[in-house]
Length: 97
Image (cartoon, rainbow, N blue to C red; front, side, top):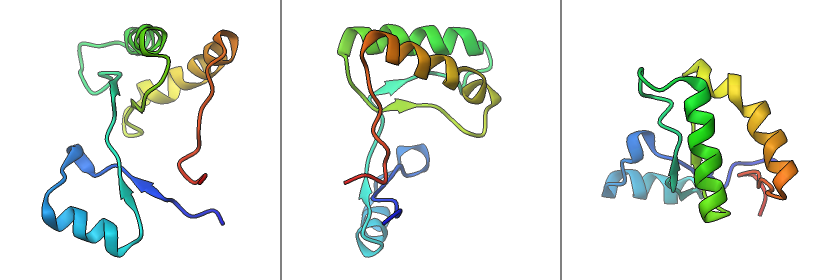
């Protein structure tokens, strides 16, 4: 089944009402552990990419926060995925069990 199992609440908001709604929908609320900081105007797409690469090298795992409302994420995601393959890191789709 191709149904989302996890959901990141906007702004990371996890109050009782949000958690209740997630439970009603059968979703698990998740937050990020690695922030690309792509939301900051002063952070370029390349700087966001380098930040994420450095954090992934340090921790070897994590949930990366990128914003699909920012074109920076779309610009660097292919490069990030290629690099991850080169260094032996993998991704997990949020629809997989």
